[in-house]
Length: 238
Ligand SMILES: [Zn+2]
Image (cartoon, rainbow, N blue to C red; front, top):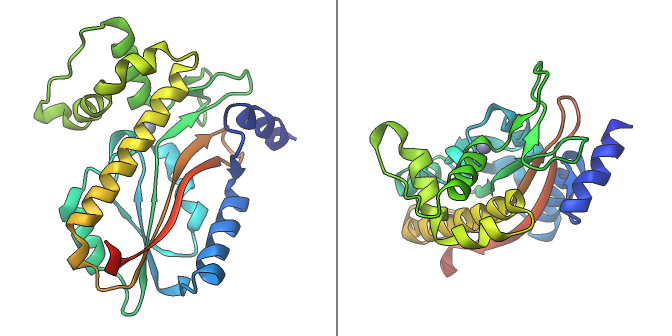
């Protein structure tokens, strides 16, 4: 019942979104049958936000090995080329690589996007907290410039990456969704860039990528996933 009500609200904002179960069945099926990948020898890396609410999201693909965590605040692949190289070296013999990546956004039954009710909390709060904080700063000060400092490096770099899209984001009728979308494309760009830079480290033939936006619902209700990119890259073509 609750799942159905969430489904309606989620699809209003993300018409292509499917719940956890449908997503995992669809993509694991495509990898195994469509691309003849032995998923028992597939190692997964994730580039998702550090937020504890995303831990169940990795259960989208509970049956595969991993995950190797590439992500930090917002879901940007902060582990960089060193992280990706380590991941490449951990893949089983004759196995394959799978990278699941993207930002996340909460939704409530009151149809608030960018918020969610966290387990055992009475009031709704920001989700993704890092992206909603960046949005707040972008809205408050048109001349806002993040200062890269060691103690808050991830948030500052996330804001730096999104700053070129500031105008577009704050003027969008749905800025919470717009900043999430912008963040997705930045993660996608960086994953491709880092993969290209580390291509010689992969001793496998195929690297599967699945990127999109995770939509967090209430505790105990399945999350949703709205795909943006699904591809299987041959390492020879990188
Ligand atoms: Zn987050």
